[in-house]
Amino acid sequence: MQQSLKNTHKSKIKEHNLGREIYVAHIDNFTDSTDTILKGIDKRFIQFYFCSKGNLTFNFNNGLYKFNLKDGNSFLFYNPTLEMPLDLNVSAQSKVFIVALSIKTMHAIFSEYSIDNNFLEETQFDDYYQQKKFPHSMRSIFHQIETINLDTPFEKMFLMAKVYEIFTLYFADIEGKREYCPYLDNEMQAKKLKMAKEILMSNLQNPPHIKDLADEVQLSEYYLKEGFKKIYGNTVYGFVLDKKLEMAREKLITSNQKVKDIAFEIGYENPSHFIAAFKKKYGITPKQFTKELG
Image (tube, rainbow, N blue to C red; front, top):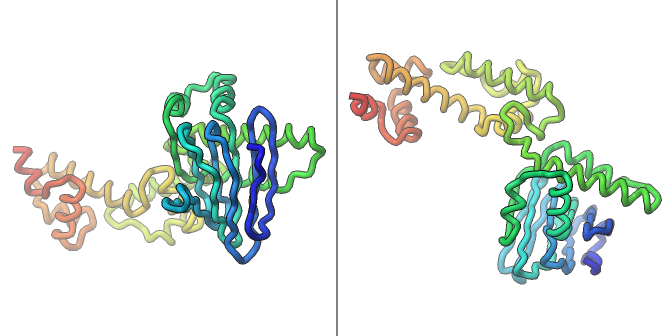
């Protein structure tokens, strides 16, 4: 990691070598042109990229393979068998934060705190790639790194603390917890999303429009849609559709109602639309389903 980042235009680049084979960098392409960033990176290093504004394009194998990364997304990769120098196109008005460290150091950090994570096993011998959204709370960490103004010894201490914060949020997998979402700023918003779910469950036959639901729980439409998908793994209307079909399936099992009556009851004006949706979800039509029940 001795070689410095090289850029073709005038991006602001800030690099920090923190010792223990840990490297942090911030690139701010504030210009109106795409900037190409080049750097040789040892294959022993695992690399984390966080796009906090705009978008980026990674070029692998001399440009034969390209990979795009948009605002709010992260990309982790590690390949112990191939030299993969950084060849990165940073679009105009875009920002990226980079953390790179040797796999040995990464494992030492996990071992130091007795962290049991599949990541350790998966990177023991093989290459590893992962793209995912990063928690919204990371943005404040990136801002702190970007604006740091301390004397060198304290700067290194500060940056190491920020690296640990980033790893904690990245690997803790708090995104998987059903009633909490790191995309959200606080628990109050998570509670509002839970309230939105309860409103939908109470009005499956005639669910409110997104705007009305957002107004009722006092969230923006954007936060409602993004946060709901993060927590419940489905869009608002996808969630409603699934619950409707689950209700219909239960009615087919427990009652003798006609298919068209069930369709009307769960909010379908056209029974054929209900039949198509049911078949898409369960692989058979409602009529075939009831026949299989005997």
